[in-house]
Length: 147
Image 1 (cartoon, rainbow, N blue to C red):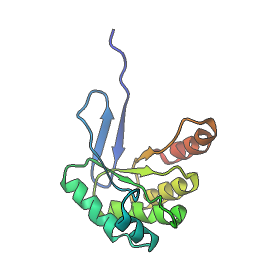
Image 2: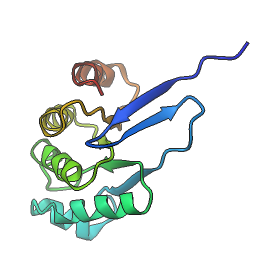
Image 3: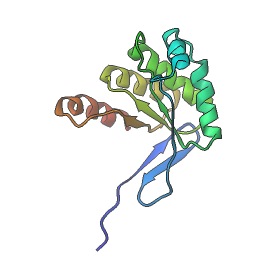
C-alpha cells in the first residue's frame, strides 16, 4: 500500500506553488539574508530596502519559485524591519514568500503585514526549531495567519 504524501500549497500575489506530494522540485531563493553579506547588512541597518527588492526580482528571473526573507543582522530591529521587507518583496515579485526568523514578534508582525499587502497569501515559515517553548509561540501564529 502506498504511503500518504504531504503537500502544501503556498500563495503569493500572483502565483501558487505546491510543495511535496511528488511534484516538481521547488526552488527557494535565499539571497535576502544578511549573514555574511556586508552590503545587505549595511543597507538593512540603514533601513534601505532597495537591495531587497533587487534581489527578489533577480532571484525570480533566475528561476526561484519562492523568496526567503531574512533581515536578522546586528543593529537591525527585526520586529520593525521584517514586515517592511516582506511588503517590499511582495510588491516586487508575484511568487510566495518564506518568512525566515526565529523571533516570534517579528514573525507575527511580518504575517500581519503580508495579510494586509496580499489578502489570501499563504507563506512558508522558516527557522522554527522543534523546541516545545518555540513551537508554543510560533504554531498559533502560523494557524492564525494560515501559513
